[in-house]
Image (cartoon, rainbow, N blue to C red):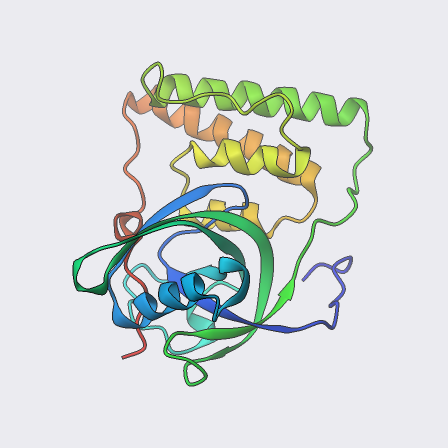
Length: 238
């Protein structure tokens, strides 16, 4: 925690879904839900037993870990997911579409309060920017958009990507650009943890410039993190 990030003191119990990926605010995440405890979570979200159709996503630290039984196995900073669509399938499974919503810090983790993980969390809104506004904001946004365009032109076919709308809020601009890039989990986690929107935009520009350079040198798209192929698999507590 940075010195300018005081603990708010407010805590809330929240259902959690550990995954081998980092969810970012405003970014869509489809999931195939087949494990019984997380099928129950989706059912509770649909029924209203869990309010607001919202649950927390935390990235698992070790790509080889599937059984989460302690807070030390997941990253401290996570993002909630809003359940947008849920299609019931045979056997009680679901195909769902979620969207990242708000950031939180995990303080405690319980495996006994519900069939699924429940965490005690603190909400983490963006901090007032430590950088100057005005020209700095315009310059950073332009640099980040240019880096995003270079990366996408190198990585994707025409029509497979689009620039974020010009009216995109500064707080979400970096997240939307990062969603188009196959960044390592550690980089995505760093973006999620950064609470200064201008710092986050600067970091996105640096990461996309680096990745575009890799693509130019290798003339190949980097393979996604091994865990990204298992987005529908919740970490179990068995």
